[in-house]
Length: 522
Image 1 (tube, rainbow, N blue to C red):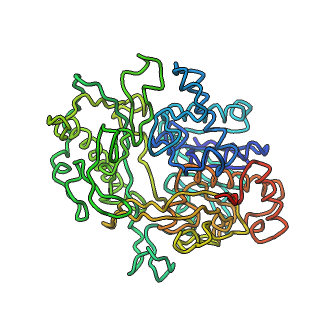
Image 2: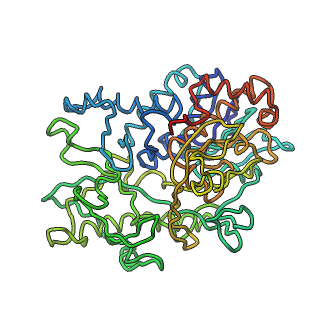
Image 3: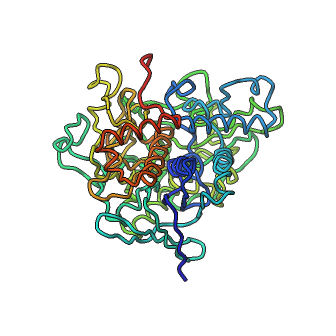
């Protein structure tokens, strides 16, 4: 039996971009269907268990009004439901984990709760229909338009045909694009194609993609033994040393991403060096009343468990399954090494008190529900954002290329992790940039929009357009664009190409709390 559902905006994928798109379209009064492969909406924040990577102006400006609502919601959640100390409760910019990488590091379950609260009015009214544990299976097309997307329930196998005027691909890997015949690129472009300083000198390598990571959460209980069963592939990972790495992967050794010089990481020490424990910590127990938490909780998304032995995009199902297994084995092997063999500052070996927190990520194996995806399929767009548009070395004014069709702003340094092409980090300075509407418009298909890490970037510029607040901004702009097009009975291509329509749409964005340019004080 095949069900049928219809909406004005169909969003395939319920990550950060999908949630932002659903909220935006629903605010505009449009009916929305949003699907999600896992049983948690929120993507990077929840099912991938990665606390927000943000720029250093985030508390003042540089994000949308709804993203700020989310951030405020996280802090309010802890203030309302947790026994914070008086000092922490009074801290305006509370950082629950006191993480060095994020100004608002928090638990995946908190992010999930806040997103559910934000969507609740629309879900309860029936304006937004959420279909969890569903994946897109096929599409029906007519010329340059998609008429329907068929999704399949991973639990029951039942199929649902979704029809809508507009479909947004908010999946983590751009999974709707090949099903719908939308032209796209993957991997690394060549310098001859893009003119980018950091692009490949030779031919493009479509299968050269950034590492993905199977993230997990741990706390630490000194004197206790929570050592996991020795992983099946531990011997392989214990001996594995990449050509470009200074030591075995399972070690405290690594490299500085920008200089590529060897470095040794500190684990617990916070007085010097790069402290792994505090890097992505999501609970700092000192913020809470004594006894509330027996330990801090930290997220292990570190250089040692980046997986780059092969991609999981545009490969056979068998190969994808094998790489996912390998990546999980790497993460579990790193945990086992830390519990049993890791050198300690006191001369001992291993931290058996490290406890895998299955409950924090909501899984039986203790690993996040979905791998942390840094690089997706990317649409071939009417406009592609290049390194020269956003690189600090190319933009002497201190801000990125001015895009008259801006639909948002963002900032992060260009941060590419080791890749499946056996390539090292690429990490260098960018400047605060805009998000151009042209990067949302597929070169041919009329009614599909990207709403995740799949806009018209390159392998290089994906490195600064892939972070949390920017993905949210992309999703929100896509949701508003779809709603605007439904209301005006025009296409996204027409909005991009017609100055009057573009101005009207940008006015809507501003009314919705979206900044289109950086303030001069940056």
